[in-house]
Each structure stands twice: as structure tokens, then as C-alpha cells.
Amino acid sequence: MANLRHNSQIVLATTSSGIAATLLPGDRTAHSRFGIPIDIEPISICKITKNCDLAKLIRITNAIIWDEAPMISRYCVEALDRSLQDIMNINAPFGGKIMIMGGDFRQVLHVIEKGSRGQMISACIVRSQLWATTKILHLRQNMRLIHDHEFAQFVIRIGDGNEPAKEDDMVKMSAEIVIPWEGENSIKKLIQHTFPQLENHGWDASYMVERAILTLKNCDVHMLNDMIINKFPGDEHILLSFDEVEGDTHNLYQQEYLHTIAPGHNAGKRAFLPRIKLKTTDGAGLPFVLIRKQFPVKLSFAITINKSQGQTIPNFGIYLPRHVFSHGQLYVALSKGVSRAATRVLIKDGKVEGEEGDFTKNIVFKEILLSQPQVFIHYV
Image (cartoon, rainbow, N blue to C red; front, side, top):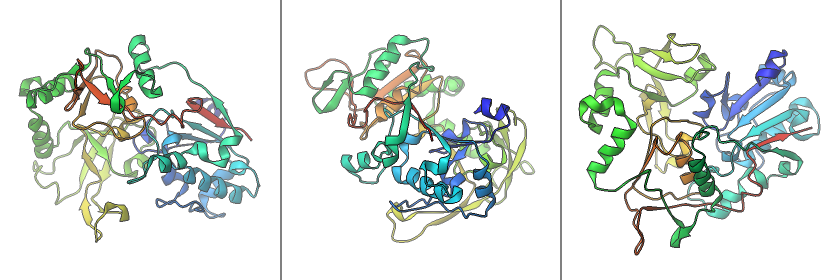
């Protein structure tokens, strides 16, 4: 992408998830960039008209990058394919545009609410007719674990489903990374490893939440939409602090605040963050639409496994009160750290009868791991 832009060519960078969208310069989610419908259908098309500014931009674009592509429904990719053919008026895959997609099929796939294994496999992009025209390139080096080769091999075996397992896909975790389950005391040990800066506060988990809510100073929050990402392209968008209004931080829900952005080349800049209306979707399972007017952020002291894709976390704690339930979740969790020394796992129900050590479930859909492609490029 940097090379093409250096040569005055245009590249559109997109990703499947919002957090991954903060990792590439000028990146946005594919849904935001191309107007892909949220409730996707096999015959859906993108919300792009032929004469709009986006269509004009697409016509002069040299390549499109789509990161974390395996975690999106194949119908989203096919919808973009149909739309690009219509915009370019060319009956060729993606309208003759070079589509570069990246991802790791060992990671989590597209989420289908209450979906079966067969439904999730069917929604994967490898089952799309476009896959037959895709050339696969491989990346072999794990850059996160480049200084811990042994742990890197263990993580790969987990991702491939090759780690020896007991009944019900239970695999043994290394004693070096496991925190034995001892109730609340074990949770405090996990917090101690993950947040060493809280040493002066007795590793009290409630302190993190209370301090963040009461003062909103130096607390990380997670954006709930692309509002700030669009204003400051190319940043990691970690919100460091909210400004106080006349020294009163308790009027958070009565006024609109400024916030600072850091790190990145926009560090120190300020953006206006308004309260917006957030609505529940049809899939929320409610008999009504719930509307909340709030700032589009939430505290981010913890993150789910599915949301963590694309992150590299120096001190990483994995808390498993229940075992994983879908393809690639354990692999994603273990692959976010940079070494065994920096990774800790706490498993609430990790004992297997007659076995020593701590175990947890590892689910791998080997049908998806055809050749374990990690980067794949569509050539016209």
C-alpha cells in the first residue's frame, strides 16, 4: 500500500472489523467504505450509485485491500463483486480491480447467531465462486512471537488442531502460562499481570471501573462507530482523557465533551465527541427497539476474543470462565501476546478427570484449513 501510494496510485484500505480498521493508514471497515448491507443476503448489492463520489473514486482506484477477510460472510464479498462490475461496466471479477485480501483461516470466522458448524463453513469465503480465481500467497513468520519460537509453534499447533487433545477436544495448557484457579485471588493475580500500573491500588478490579467512571482521566475507551476514525485517519484512536467542563466531571451525560487522541501522527489533537442515538438491532432478541443517547464509547479494560483480532498486547491475560465455543477462538486468544512470559491464562473449569494440569477446549474446523492461506490476492 505504501509503495503504490508513493508512486501516486490510489489504494482503498478496508477491514472486516472496527478495531482492525485503526491499524492501517486511512483504513475503514468494508461496510462503512462500500455501503455493504448489515443484514446481508445472497443477492445483496452495495449502496453505491453509479454517479456518486465513491463510484468516481472506485473508477480511478488501482487496488483495494480488505484485511481480516475470513471473518466476513462470503455474501459481503460477493455483494461488492456485483457492485464493482456494475460501476466499472465490466463483466469480470470485482469489475477488473485488483482485490488484495488478508487474513488467517485459523482465526475466528463469520459469526452466525445460533448457527451450526455447517452454516458457518458455508458462509466462509472459501465457499464462494470467487475463490476459484484467487491466487494464494503465504506468510510464514509470526512477527509477534519472533523471539519465542517454541511458544509460536505451540500456538500454530493450536490453530491447526494438531495439539494432542483429550476427550471433548480438551488441550493442555503449559504450566508456564497458567494461573491455577483459586477463586477471586486468581482473578487478582491475572489483573496484576495485565495491569502492573495498578500496583499502588492493591490490584483492585473495582478501582479501575470506579476511577474511570468518576474521573475519566487516563482511561482507555473503545469507539462504538467510525465517527473519530473518519476524522483522524491512520491513528490508533486510543482516547486518553476527557476534558473537564468547569471542573465538573459528573455532568458527563448532560454535556458534550472534547477528547484527545493519542498516539500516532495526530497525537495531541482534539475532536468534538457528541452524544448520539444508538439503537438495538433486530438480532438483539427484544420485542421493541431500545434507543440510548450516549457518547459512542465504552470502557476497554477488557475485550472479547472475537474483537481482539489484529491486536498485539504486551501484557496479556486470558480469562476463561467458560470454554471457547467456536472455531479459532483459543488460537486468537493465545496469539495476541508477544511471549510466554507476557501471557497468562486463567481457566475456571480446567480440570480433566485423571489428568494433571489445566485443560481447555480447542475447536478447529479443519474443513476450512484447506492450505492454511494467510494472505491471498485476487488477480485479474
